[in-house]
Image 1 (cartoon, rainbow, N blue to C red):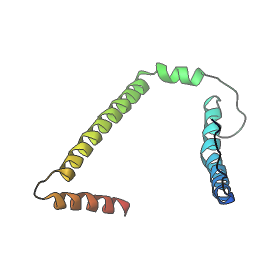
Image 2 (image 1 turned 90 degrees about the vertical axis):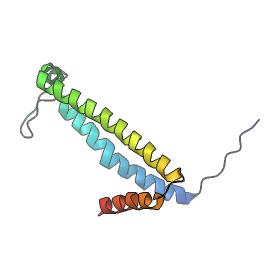
Image 3 (image 1 turned 30 degrees about the vertical axis):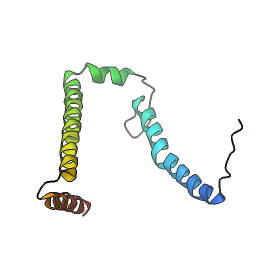
Image 4 (image 1 turned 45 degrees about the horizontal axis):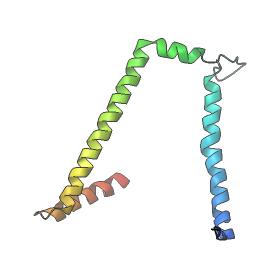
Length: 117
């Protein structure tokens, strides 16, 4: 069976190519530049030397830094779990046949409205 390809209009390319170029310029290039800086001992001025993974090994040998990463990881897990539990509770509240469902929707809508300001 032969697959029939649809022709993509030129308008798609007029929108997609500049956006892809902006994404590459504003996200990918700074990431790669920062990654290259992390393998050097550059202070922001003057000359620099390639140090490889030496900075990373020193960083993970420091117990305080490892504790900070562990705390951040635990906090991310707890916040994700809490957000999922609250989202499930609100979804059940929106779909239930209870009194005050409109007030619950109003509270959530107001919260979203005030966060955008």
